[in-house]
Image 1 (cartoon, one colour):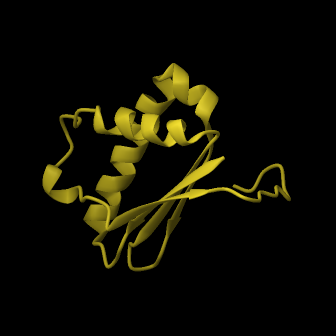
Image 2: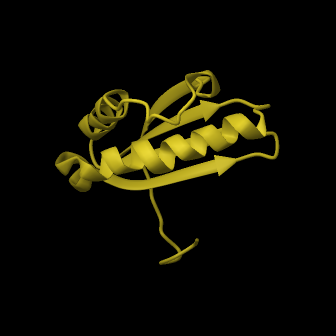
Length: 110
């Protein structure tokens, strides 16, 4: 398994956070779910947020190719008509790790 850790450093305004939530929920998630490859590849996704709006997005895929495919799918999406590009930012940084250990202690968390 592989993990992509994407950082969006804070502070980020409530408007920027809302725009990121909208993009994730209404554009990116549907594109990922519609891609037949991603159904087999994506194992887990966590979005962590600080009080200052900074976020950490952790995507776990079964293979390193899954990370690359997710990036292709995301970058291939077009902005929705109500999205403001001025409120959408590039990540502060992106890192890829090989998952060397994984434990699941609960069947549901959220």
